[in-house]
Image (tube, rainbow over all chains, first blue to last red; front, side):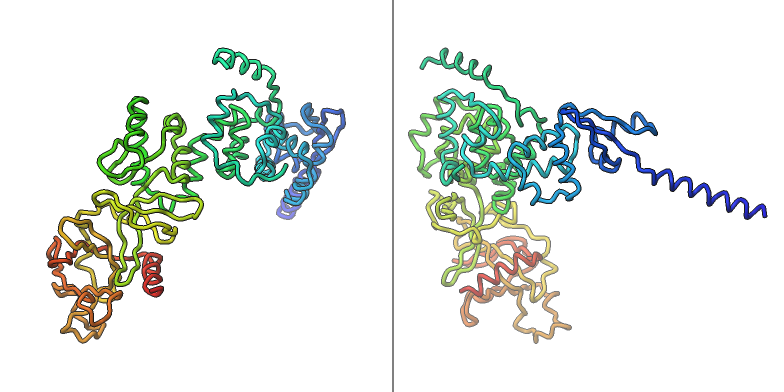
Length: 166
Length: 321
């Protein structure tokens, strides 16, 4: 009997452990436009910035995490990409603005896979495009002096043949 | 426009420049993007603003690109030659360089400031500022625009010939081929429109005129594929000839009991010559570690070929004759 009792106890203990891990903890992300999105803890694992915070606080209660730099629109796009396992086709459907913002957020939340994906998508986008296009895309103002521009053009002369229309 | 005014207008522009975009990202994120771009795209991105110009010039980026396109031809020796040129140019006064340039640029005769043992750099004056701070990008530009003549070996596959000779080459981007000059006196042109697949990095560090010391002389046996140094005159450079180790005349060519491997004499067979040609076979003494032969044919050191790709290349050339 004593032996059986111990066995019984062990089974119960295992069951309890399983249940604990089954009860999926949720994380609430609050976006810049005030929307609260509840996501599973596994989703957050890839967001290293949040993960680091969770590791530090180690609480059983559900966690609320404010994301003042991320809009609900962009966050839901990111969720789509994650659940689609970062399909290139999904990336192609993003607008330029979305792509840029997602890249910034990927950096802010330290999501490595997403960062590489968006970085190479941006590179594809600016391939074979004019200087003006890149300037506009990156939202950068030309700060060269005319002399510097002439100098650069001289050095890179052959880069200007066969540029795509924007 | 005066330079002072220029400077002011530049400052104003910078003040206006509300960079609130990807330039705010940490370095390595931007590097991620830049790493995916081709050289031509990088040149274009460099013209966007000063900050991107500087980022697109990093040595790490260009080292990767050089490896990609030029890795199979530009080896350690070419890199050393490049370093030799740029160091020399960086330490010379601009005025002196200009004088040199106007006097002797384009001529391969005589000893010019930028003609090193094995390479030549021409028409570089407008790139001098790049040599110091972005040497790798400058190297890429000089390779791509044919300004840097670098050392390689050219496969020659003529009528009676099949060998590799040392040369310096310059790339022509329009035809995607090379011009080759011989390192022998005067750097005369030896061939134009040489395709990529007829060039290779020299497999040995021995200079073209020096005897190659082999460490496999005693292991060579019939059927081994080799390259052997040959020159016509004692004062000229060696070329590397493809050959196969053959059997002695006394041998019955029974491979399992063949004594040729242990004989002091070594038979070298040149398949590129007809069997009846007097150039078809040469016999060497294995134990003489110096040049052997006679007038018009001096045989130097032997390189045993172990690399399957290398052997295939020679055989393809043989078959294409």
